[in-house]
Picture 1 (spheres, rainbow, N blue to C red):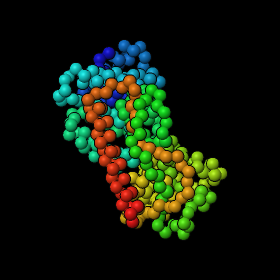
Picture 2: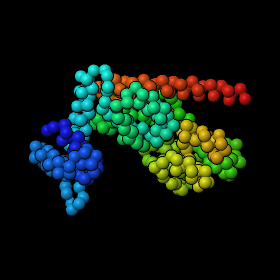
Picture 3: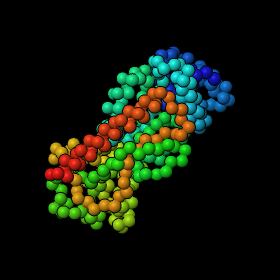
Length: 311
């Protein structure tokens, strides 16, 4: 099989549309069809099932997609390794939560693109830490940001960068601000605006409620932190979010932090990659930029805390 076929298969498996695949790769549609038929003949199995105008992956196609991704990645790494130190190209696929993508990664990405303008960076959502770990294991991610409690790595190399403050926030006129301290019992009948299942701080919140034998019934689940924040501002409920996601709204008076008594385990932003991952120059550079950026963030936070303690 040829690398061209693997790349065509990868795009077709993602779009499930041969016409769109041809347009993205600047091929004739007949070329895409011919390449896929040739690949299926070589593998001795059907990769795509064609149902009228619809195209879906067969079970064999889903399995082969994992290997195709790995072979393409290995090809890119090999080309990068023997191509010298100039004009690096290829792709870095990075898993990250929405909060990291919104509040921390733009600065890192801007500096990285100055160093490696020809390297394509793909960010994939990593709402669940377990999903991010699985994708690192199967090679579909090169690198991931994980927000979680500290856990020992196995085949993954994991580094903690910074401890995240988790805040419970509500609209400023919420009735619970009449209390100097808010207990878990006070929250039993409140409406909670939650991130998706699998999110570390949502899991810690629910574990905390279970240990206190509190079972709030009113819950809304969102796929977007920004949507949660707008609903908090509208007075629709209470949310538990990282400080970096809500510090601007708190500063502007759009929401306030509740004085919640909690026993949540510390949560850290961590970076992770497979211990056997080939550390290409672009990947090394990206990790170095991450370290530099978070080192600056920690210094800024220490200075901020020092000023607040003097007030």
